[in-house]
Image (cartoon, rainbow, N blue to C red; front, side, top):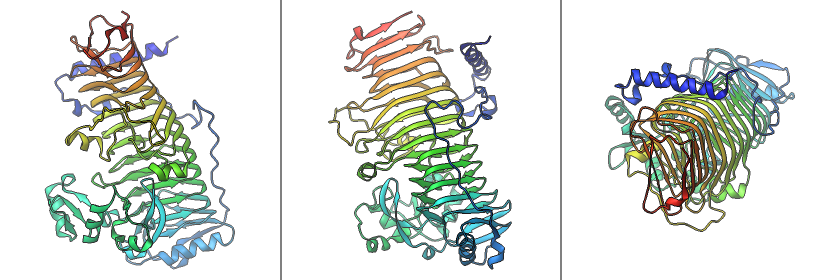
Length: 573
């Protein structure tokens, strides 16, 4: 009988053979097709192997009544505004208890669509729903964005306090996001930038950012990230309407929501934002945003309960699959965690993070299972981020069978000093801004604990693993098992407690292969650095305690810094 350890060892040998055959090839150019992955588990039920009691997610119950959009005066072609036709078709079924509105093939221009309970919008293959660029059609509504209570323009697809809502079919929903977003020059080619500037809008003083209007530019200078915290009344927000770009799909405080089949693309801000939804099913969707799209997230699942996301693909401008629960005081006062989440069988191409938790996690995140996902060229693979001021607890997270290739920055990243930039932007700037001072622990202190990551393979990254906690609240009980990664840099572990590394293989170009600073309760077992005969690790920091290196290869050196107590390091050959 073949053991799990033997299977993993075979994978290590296969990857090492590939490394030696292409050892003159830059790390970032290895073909995705050469990546050996873990055993396929994609045919399993979404609930198979979940490590916590996961309730069965209820799907919408939609009555059989069916109508066609074309029967309500809709005109295809993209020249005629079909807002009234959509509203009439929706009213025709929901006024009779609910049903399905079929959107046939064609280009259907429309303003925002208000969803209702007991409604299915079925976009047939060949249907393109194109949302108007006329911003006067999008009135302000009270909502939440980036975890804060605020006002924004109404979303192109909007629903609140609903039950039984479904968006199905193989059609395409397009948010016309280019009319809403600002653009950084660094993210375009010279010809694209010249074309954009010639189209109108305004530039900042440095001539490296384009804005749709002067109103947008001024508001952006005064906002905290994308939320103007200094404004309180609707009238004040009306004065900067052009800046208040909406998420594309906003479903709030609702039950039994299904997204199955469509493509969602070109959103003004985030693409899909289920907020405080119970029983959310997402499967077989495609989410596309230009890589230059600011805040062009894929799906942001916020303060939701009982979620299954499967068999979907993402190619976006910001984080792809995001788990959130509110930001700072607004998030803590809401007090609704994101919990009972299953994510399986998804593919992420471009994006700031493949699967991301945070940084808006002030209400907490718990009970999350992620498995059998592939990240190709994603800035960061698995991304956990927060900072002082957030509060909240992230716990009981289980991740397994993840494949990554050509990751520009960190394959696995925990960053509790997140400052609003992508990892790539942070590395290009002044680097990580870390404050070593131990601050008081309060309700504003974020906590990440009990996170289990197993069976992860990465073929090419800048860094394999980055663990950065806070000195006053270390990362706690982080388990990494059966990890195989090829990267320029290996592992960095700072301000973490109870880190367990078992069966971790790091193929690195630089030394040290691993660094531990001010960490405690660290255990390594069967950790290896093949292809590096001079491999060594460093252990430093005055708060370093209880480091146990089990089954340690005598060829690997252990350098203990002068500020660390060597008696706290135990090496067992």
